[in-house]
Amino acid sequence: MNLRIKLAVVIKDNYPVTKHHCLIIPKRHCADYFDLYQPEIKLYHT
Image 1 (cartoon, rainbow, N blue to C red):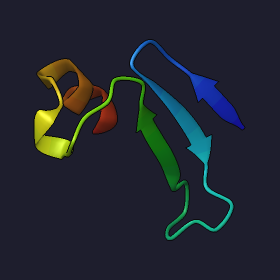
Image 2: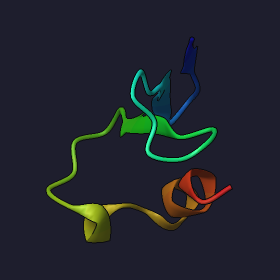
Image 3: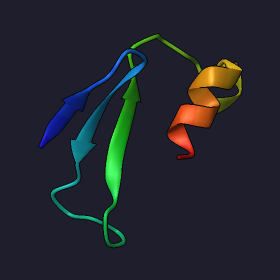
């Protein structure tokens, strides 16, 4: 299952660490987590 949203692509992990674990890949290039904008951080923590 892939989900494309405005800020990221969400992919179901084939080998999840926990139940409902997924991979969230930002569409905008960032060197690390601290380069994310506030709307991106809020989205990724929901």
